[in-house]
Length: 413
Image (tube, rainbow, N blue to C red; front, side, top):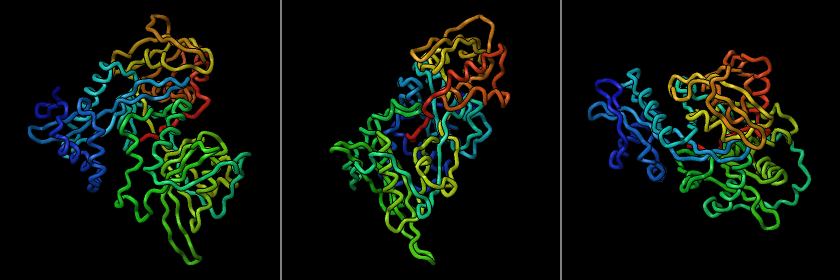
């Protein structure tokens, strides 16, 4: 597939990986990676789904995808292409390289029968024109643990915590993660090999902090949660001023979650707890005594693209009965364009082509944003991005599309 007269796209060959990866690292302005990280990234690369853009003998663009399954409202795991490693050399911007790679990639995803494509964007302004909408958000905070207390639920004292080497506890932690996947839209089932990503711990990326630490939570001998974190001791005029950075926390029940947060708040010589990439409805916000001293802030996370509108909308359930006809605009994937009738409820759904009059009109980007249930169609309509043609259809669809659990993507790729 040609992008212009000089640039050609082709599937990556294993012997080309080193140059392909080096081009990607340069495009993102990153320093040299550790040998461990490089080896892991190569082992996870799906070569048949990785593309290189070539200008003669020069590699000038990269794009890849992973085979994932994502939880959608109702708990089903739906095949999703995890778009990744997208870059264009600064020497070849505005020559159609990115558009050509996105075109080829979505054609391939469609041919494979995967109804969804998802990504995390280094620059959020890039992917809207290719039909991706921000479908999940993440919470960050810097908590003054010296001045913020916790109100703990019943049963917290029944949880036993113990330190463990991250590698030694990996199997138990992965079992907790796997149990949580069906509970929240946006979570990805872990493919073999991906569990190793959590253990990457190059000293060059610690910023002076400790090696990765792990605490495991147990009740009656069963692992019910874990936290992975780093500590960095510092001193100020008034004494100790250390910082805890949370890398990952998962718990199967409220008491376990509270016990882990209590531990993180109480580590000796530490006065600040930094959290990032957490769900917007994270439980600690409702345990703390002073949310203002936690400085919570929200940013975009997972961008969702419906590659097959009918299959994707039929794969999830709806929290209220819905019978609505969408007029979908999708210039980039024209097989989606036109009218679709969605009927569904909490038990299941169908979505088929129709010639009936449209009730709502919107682009596939808005459908992607609303798909996991965390972005309201009413909110999108308030921004002029969804138009109601039948009175009452917007409220009906907006209520139905909602999720009682806020979607979240904790799995980087």
